[in-house]
Length: 242
Image 1 (tube, rainbow, N blue to C red):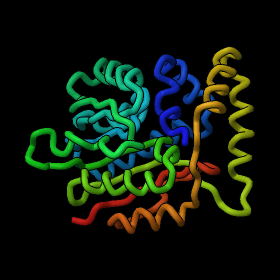
Image 2 (cartoon, helix red, strand yellow; image 1 turned 90 degrees about the vertical axis):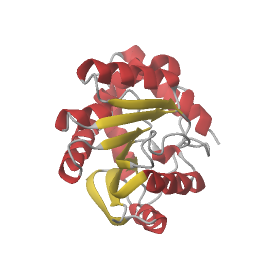
Image 3 (cartoon, rainbow, N blue to C red; image 1 turned 30 degrees about the vertical axis):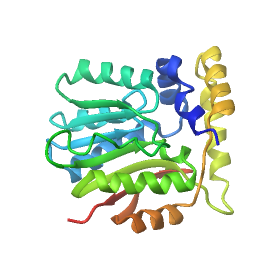
């Protein structure tokens, strides 16, 4: 299992990876924008939101552009990623950060100490996670979904963008081909560097959308739907009942 590698391998190269993601991952900005639009549609303007696996803060920033009164809590296994995300967000939205935590979501204690941030179990209006949960083996994935459910207040939403597999489909191969084409537009040294890290250190665990929808429902979520899909990447949402 290479979960720890996946979490930590970009510690020293957070800003480079940020540039690479934006330029090379097909549908990346569209995915973030739609996640943010869903937050604006479903959440109160002063929503409390966890960015789970925040990376360099791109998802949180996308949400704050739509909802400047929202507040975000940043969690990532890379301390450097959390630092970069906090710096970016603080510059644009000085009062937006509820807190930060360096925690590996593959570990059993990643959710400790963030329940209500001293507000008597108030919970969160949403948890947003983009291209993160797919790095968890399925047993750890189900555990993480259950923890997300517990952290949400009644009526709260989980929004997760992930890679999926589908028997008989070439969507993953097509997606990889598009990435390879986009890599040609990036500085060659950066492209080769990040591509090597992804190949050597990242691990992905893909399941079908139907399987993950069922896992979400078993965790207690209702209104489980796919809001957006680009080839093998999809944005799924689910709500904790009132």
